[in-house]
Amino acid sequence: MIVPTLLKKRVPYPDRNSLGIATFIIFAFAIPWGGWVVIRQIADGGDQLTATLAFLVLPAGVSLGGFAASYVEGGSVGLGEFAKRTVLARFDPKALLLVLGTPIAAGLLTFASHPEDLMGRGRPDLMIWLGSLTLLNLSTGPLAEEFGWRGYLLAKFERLFPTWLAGLALGPIWTLWHLPLFWDTVFAGAAPFLGYMLWVCAWSVILAMVTKAANGNVLPAVALHLFLNTQADFFSAFLPGLDGSALPSGLPLAVSSFVVAVTVIAWTLRFARPTSA
Image (cartoon, rainbow, N blue to C red; front, side, top):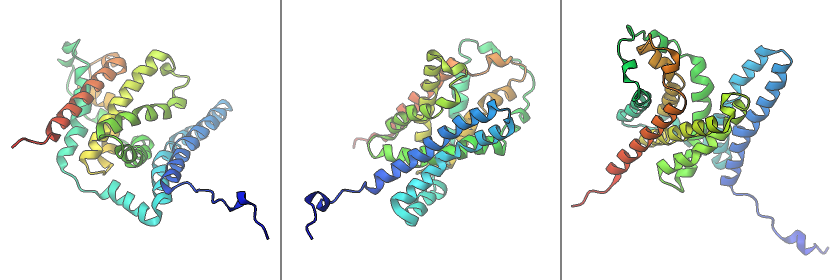
């Protein structure tokens, strides 16, 4: 039997790395985006409870994508190594200083033009902040996303770029992922969206540096992500008498976050330089 020459040619299969990235994209983008489109239809139909529950669950596609992609690339061994690195990797507790210090520094910088608002605002009420550190806030963003963004995708970018640049490259992708959530909100305009992108990219860099300092363990990044999501409550707790409009937010917070990110990069690069004999 004569087999046509065309059929004899071996069609190359995608390598496991490419399949892993494709798997991550499907989990991180296709599933949440498709789900959010359906949610809008459900919400328009009046079923707000179902829509809300789906909204809270769908972001987990990002972290699930990190685990799924690791399995596609390396099987059970690759999955185990990914889980071990992202959860059990040991690191210097000093890395946690970035987790606590950077959001506070960025928030304080927004008061540079009105420092008087930091004074005489009543007795701090820490429960305002602690009350926001709920399992719901922990699971819907930090846990749902960080194993994908910082656990999986950041490691891919770090093969090509230094850590800070890898974090910066990841920033626009992370921003784009949020697009369906803000399509019809105040961030829909060009200027607000650019400000939001600046904020996301700044923290993408810092989260990358935190993950690097933690030897790939993403739990500090999870903690920082949670802090960022509750940052307004933190400052409200320590400045209970301050009007909400004066709390760190918007473009001032985006700019201050950028300043903090540049400072972290400069500080890290300074100590990364080899010392001369």
